[in-house]
Amino acid sequence: YKMRVIKGKDYKDMSRKAANIISAEIITKPDCVLGLATGSSPIGIYENLVHWYEQDDLDFSQVTSVNLDEYKGLPKENDQSYDYFMHEYLFNKVNIKPENINIPNGMEEDSEKECARYNQVLEDLGGVDLQLLGIGHNGHIGFNEPGEAFEKETHCVDLTESTINANKRFFEKEEDVPRQAYTMGIKSIMKAKKILLIISGKEKAGIVKEAFFGPVTPKVPASILQLHNDVILVADADALSEV
Ligand code: GLP
Image (cartoon, rainbow, N blue to C red; front, side):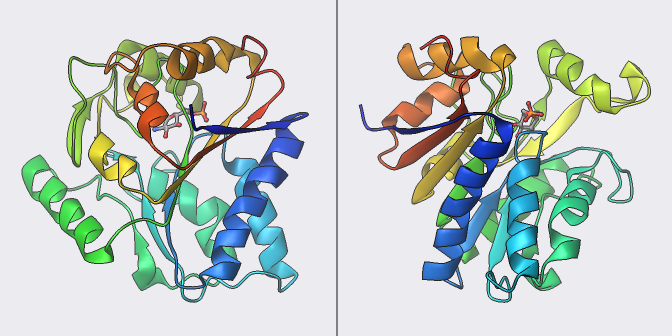
């Protein structure tokens, strides 16, 4: 069982430890391709990266980013879009070049067209060096929801009730939560050279046990990471409290 586990005392400690791993990637490979993620879990990581950039310890000028997912139907200007999130927490605060930023276009109504475009983006990049991942309460990664089979490439998903419920806290009304999203597929995620998984909080302790200490099954999408040969799980003590 190959997954390396780094335990942080709390969210702050975990965020710094995980940010150090991304920082090491950028320093050793200045033109690396970073697969990036949204959600509340990576916010602390981005804060550290911005801080180190401001101290002149990090340079994003040759970095390319490719985000996992985006809500379908939310314009970039909507503060709940992942495009907005990434600019707010990272892109507007470091020297990454706008032309090196890749995020699915949630405003493209034609799913087939947008998925094909994003798959082409991934192919042209020639592989992700380091993929950052959080995990949903139901074991989703990106927006790969539990299902009967692992979805391979970029696709449009119908979000589950569990995900809509978990994410409604960010919206004014539950009806405002988009019902669909574009997400990179499991095959695209698994192709990354390295995967950095971050998990924080007591409410994720159950899914940590299920996903990484239970069977590999599309019913728990994150469980596939057991089969990747370079995964680092950085988690706080609460998230690891059941294993
Ligand atoms: C969202 C994102 C995922 C993220 C998950 C967990 O649904 N699509 O990429 O990992 O939520 O979010 P949080 O870190 O806020 O618990």
